[in-house]
Length: 169
Image (cartoon, rainbow, N blue to C red; front, side, top):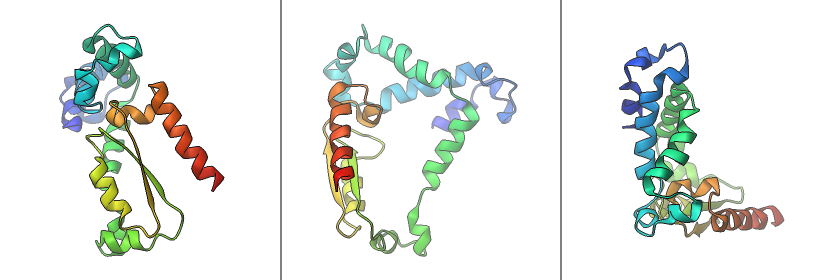
C-alpha cells in the first residue's frame, strides 16, 4: 500500500522526478497511512499525542508524521520498503527459516514493542523461539512501531535500558 500511495502522485513520473519535494502529494498520502498504522489504537484512544505536545491527532499527523516523511526521497522510501519485504533470512537455508535462525550462535536479544502492527510481539516471539539462547524483551508502548524513535521519554528509557544490559553482557 505504501508504495502505491507514493506512486499515485502524478509528479512521481515513474520515479524520474526532478526533485523529491515535487512528489509532495504522494508523500502526504504515505504519511497519512503511517500516522494511522505506525502507532496503535491505544495511542489514539488515550490521546497519547497530547503528551507529545500536539493539540489533536490531526496535529500529530501533520506535525510529526508528515513532517518526518515530507523530507524524505520517495525512491529511497520505495527501496526501504523493497528491502523490508525481501528480508527473508530463510533464503540462506534453502527457504527454511527455522534452519537459518537455528544456525545463529551469537547472543541475541530481540526487542519488540507491545502495540507494533508491523512487527507484532507474537511474530517476533516466534522468530526468537527459533534462535538458540535468544531472549525477547517487550517494551510496552502505545507508540507502536514508532516507539523505536524514542519520542516518549518512557520509550527512550526502556530502549536505553535494554541496550545498556546488552552492552554489559
